[in-house]
Amino acid sequence: MSDELIKAYQASGKSDDLVAAYKYFILKYYMLFRKKHIDFENYDIRQFMSCYIRNPEHVKSLRRGPKYQSAEARAAAYRMLSLIVKVFEDYDWARIPLDYRDSEIKDFIPYDDLYNELVMIFLGCAKDYVDQGAGFQRYVYKTFRYRLKHHIDAKMYDASDSSSTYSDMMQAGQRVPFVDSLMDTIENPLQLDPDIQDDLNNENWFNGYGNGDLFKDLSYMQRRVLVKYYECGYKDKDIARDIGYNPVYIGKVRRDLVEHFRDMRKRGEIKWLR
Image (cartoon, rainbow, N blue to C red):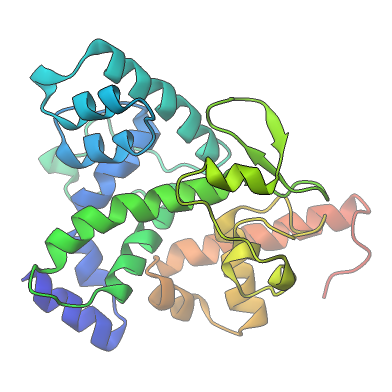
């Protein structure tokens, strides 16, 4: 069934059925960041968190079943999680029930920034999938965690001022100048091309690189909707279909953008609004 859904998605671009089929797969990562709780019994979560651990003994311990895991490895995983979630701390959050797996809330989906970013990463995997005999499910379960890590690493790049800096997760709270030598110590670093940083419709700009004062306070999602709607001329439904989000949520993001720039105009931070 999974392979039929991926073929239908790649042929039509309609993602609703595919996302629905992998809802709980996406939600377990959502709850990892939202509740800040690591399910050490879950294989995928263990594998993902091990990507952030540098001590090889801790990595080996973490990847094994719960009864083999050391207290030190678990503590290391929680230290890294506490740093990772800082990437999402300014997001708008949906209200969530205490137990999202309860049968009474089986249709619950948290339409907020975090969930929709996870859906975007999932659909990126789906778009790039090529059948090599193993099946889509096996492919996405392995690929998703690395793409998610890459996405989070990208967000560690800070473009809030004119000098590019990198927030080193091993030195929480400390900003260090971005230099070439850092590329040797960062696993799968985001390749930023300064020659295209002023091109609005590229991933660098969405991730906050080269935004300038006018756009630097926007979230990843707000920048993406801003470009799709006002630069590319997409409607809410078109944006939802293109990147796998709910049209109602896209409309909310767009209205928030309008209010954001109106407030900036009232404060005298921009001279005009069209």
